[in-house]
Image (tube, rainbow, N blue to C red):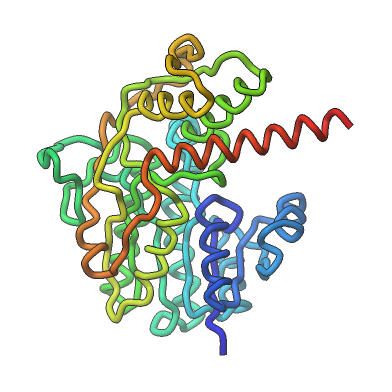
Length: 334
């Protein structure tokens, strides 16, 4: 019989990549949505028509109990979250309820269904838990033993989710693993995230649809990889005999300026500065200056490795958005 997987956050970037990966591996895939009719129709008509959709909400434990009961999963991937760092400063309570307490609700839903010994659980932790402070590993990056110091409500909420997952692993013997993923991007990334905001703006500038882009701080450095590579790491974690925590990263950092430079070069512009305006509204109350991960453990124990490098990621995103915006232009002309 085919394995069954339940994914929260099925409509997000990682959820869509993961659903496709699991479907290719022969899984019966179930996805949690919050009853958004438009989203449901979009999923069913597009790439996720194979997913069995279940209406539930991370803030409503009873609905999660029902979702687990219906899907009877062998594997549960908890990807849903209020995942935009800037937004978390504006809505810290909602971020805590969904991104933090939502993890507890999902773990309890598995336990209350009596599946704590049979269903394997993946928690989407994040490099934002490190916070970029106490950075005493120059050139080596943060690994699974590095100190946490989150610098946003999002990071704090994720840290709660991380530790409650470890607690359930130790308390109930659950096969519960945490993936501490550094920034991972791609064409499926939401437009509100800086990488996709840049790639889409560059495409629109190339097509004459806009003349500049407004951004906040351009100096932060991130360890950027491709989301399609990272969801394979999620799956590999749940195939191990014992649960554990793993960092997924590229082991190299690039600034937002670096991303801008490569993105604009894709459309033949060598100097991006005339096209970029800094807007104080996009500055965060507390910024993480640098995040660099050390994926050695995942590479050695899981056999995981990334396939797309940084220039390839930027090119992929810009090419996708040029194609997307071109199609939209043609459609609007009809």
